[in-house]
Image 1 (cartoon, rainbow, N blue to C red):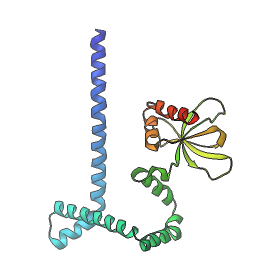
Image 2: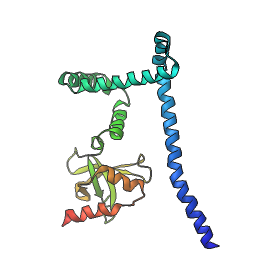
Image 3: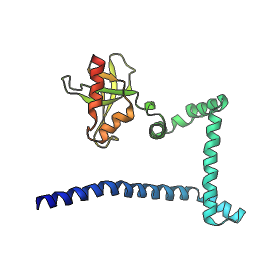
Image 4: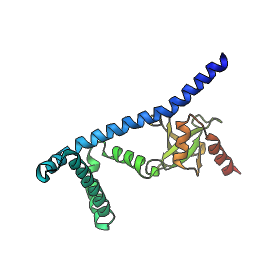
Amino acid sequence: MEKLKAFLRTTFLGGFLIVLPVILLIFVLDWFFNFLTDKIRPVTNILVETAKLNELVASAAALIIILLLFFIVGLIVRTSLGRYVIGFLEEKILKRVPLYKIIKDTVLHLFGDEKLIFKGVALVKPFGNDTLVTAFITDESFEGYTTVFIPSAPAPTGGYIYHIKNEFVIKLDYPVEEAMRTVLSLGGGSGKLLNKMNEKKS
């Protein structure tokens, strides 16, 4: 009877862990599709009225136009003049808009180079004893201290910011995304992180 219960429990859990991410992915894609189609609706309506296209074709054309716009902007910022103009607009206008920098850094963190937000990975001793905590370096701008973000597990978007003396910070040559996986998996895989620390000491 116990074996049957264990079989049913592990089988159900295994199926749940496979199906749930798929369901969540479908919800996210559905939300993103609805959000996108809602935002491109003005362009879609123009195409329907002027080019006499049906709504589905017009929506696809509007999406292609927006993607081409992204590509063109990307080409422009690859030029020195484009970088200068974008930099000027950022400094004079956009950075004065509340939350712009936070939103930009978050987008870059999600879709670009993680090190734009996290400058590195470290093991820190926030209490001054032998307890080690996984942390992400965010700033090293003041003498004698390093600013780190210590995420809560398994939701790394929450956490705490610490200003820790350099002597209690062990900087590691370790990928940010790999360290973040240990947070998401409640510490699973942290052995590699600790091995990096031991390699540094040896």
